[in-house]
Length: 152
Length: 306
Image (cartoon, rainbow over all chains, first blue to last red; front, side, top):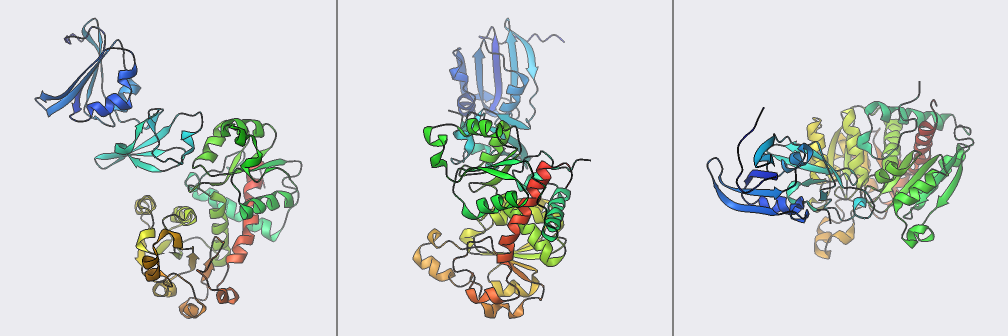
């Protein structure tokens, strides 16, 4: 299948579109997209036909893998993640909620061993109604996705 | 065929199947009835208590020695390289190259599971912060089965600190596999956490909140007492609840004949000493059973067949 839609202003990289308004900054921080050393364009509260308002992130010269794209589903389940090569959409990631998330979020439990040992944080993701719950593999505590923070 | 716990880590009660729990309880009962001094012969077990704990450590070390095994280890992290800044993962890598199994306690939650990822030999969790203390739950299960003849369909009351008491959390999780029903008796500020109630809900287990011990006593097979921690309340609030969660001898008149009182110990003032002489008191036998439950665990982890 050849995908040909041109994305203005981005020759190579990834466009994360249809992010619920307000979640863009969170995604930027949690996934450290601004720390990759590449140019990042962000739009907050943009007009959207389907969503009313939305956030959008474009990262130059970085191709998110399917697994990385799926991690975004936690905060933006209906986001579209397009990999761009030579100004054309080379790949569209269809997001699926991951079963686990590793090394992205810090465990909110300050007494969890994962904070002081050389291991990646690790959460099991469990759907709960319209929301999801994250359970730390180590301390076994369950958390809302809204209270996790980026790994330092 | 090897038993399902052979060479396995013992980390957390939700990791066990019902059949595995029954295997441990059966093995503990067998070892209590017919002591063995050969099941750990030639085995060296590391007893690594990064956080002090007298009863759990002595219980494990007694279990090891009574099975013919030998023990190395420490009872306080301040005498170890942890003090110099060594990570737990490095300590465990090294200790696991010396010993056939590691029994450990640590103040950080998740420490045992992390240790299991770096260990060449089975890790047995002797308590990791406020998280898990599986050997306590296993001795509780063994004691309940011993006193009631079954784990199936019993009615239990958990009394006292249900919020912070990891023993009642794990025991409720374990017994939910056996179709038991529960009364939760304690101050609202120390109520059972939501995640435990959610587990019970998901398994269709019935639980009821109750105000006093007296109202549930005629209904129950096991009265599991824990300490209401005075320091968690201001003086005025504590005055209001004081006495409602203390077990006195005169309250036992309404109890069933088979009803037994358990307590993870140490007790402070939540069970009056006059209760000790009652036929319902079973908490000291429960503590003694800790050795048999730990013998069962160690035997199963280190022998293909027991």
